[in-house]
Image (cartoon, rainbow, N blue to C red; front, side, top):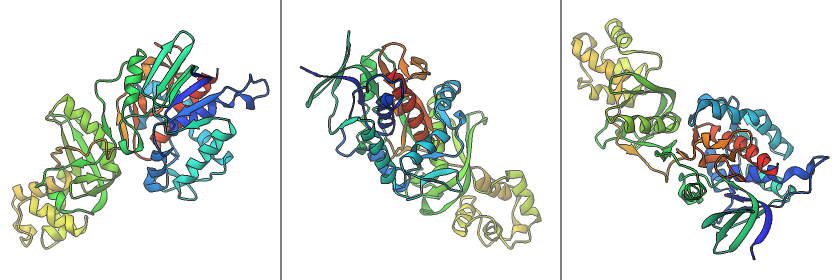
Length: 416
């Protein structure tokens, strides 16, 4: 006979742990009903693997300013409604209550003062123990069935039955952490849809092997990336740190742009990505500066504005002899150099896939859940939270905040 409990949580990552904690916390309230029995199942051998590797092992818990504009996927209004239920200040207070003090860095990111992701994971596990959550791993769930009296979760380990079930299995990013996309199949089997587009997000981008930036591996500088449609319309723009690598582009600027690039090329293969290495300048202003400059040559001119390695690479890309005097440059040469500096075509060939992606774009649409509880509109008693939903945020703690917010709402909803 299957073990009978109140709530099953499938997936014990950030959203799952948070949902389990709040689903089991009813007994802390004065007029609470008996403590719900909550079991969280996870197929990974190590609980919280994504938490432990996040932020270079420091765990970027959240961002000091979070709103729906930092997210893509489902509608902004729906995302805003969930975020408002559990704010950044609520997150800070939760971790403070569990002994984790957060510090704000210049980027707006909030990290534990210990600079150790394990501090964050330990706090979550301690909160789960205090709420009497039973975390079982490795317990891979192979299928979930809907029954008149609730749900059954099955695996080689056996079977659990509960009145309610919270699905927090994540997406497909960082598969070594245990993310394999099984949650999408569970959701479909229980009546939900999954977006047609399910792709890596916050993922490094690959440049052609001959691209000039691939010769600058290790170079980092603030850059503006501009995504344009086939007609030249600006679709998205980010300014942040860009890292040139042996395969292409990484760093916050490239990672933030990756999902928008993917969407654009799926809509129109002729959409293009361009780089501006001198913030705030345009091709016309650089052309004017070239005419007015007293620098001896193109490299000297650019060296005052960008690192020398990049300066020489851009001059070479513009097919200008490095020793040619600025006064000897033709109009076309000036135009070519200004274009290389302010609108360098990137000709992205692809991305590095789910193995290197921090999150997944796509998932179960928010329109299929009740935003005040995260309960399914098509399968009563089922709740969804975290990355399995069609919500993905920018780099900087936004995806963790989505996990805390949606996990909180789902946990409270399942608690009733």
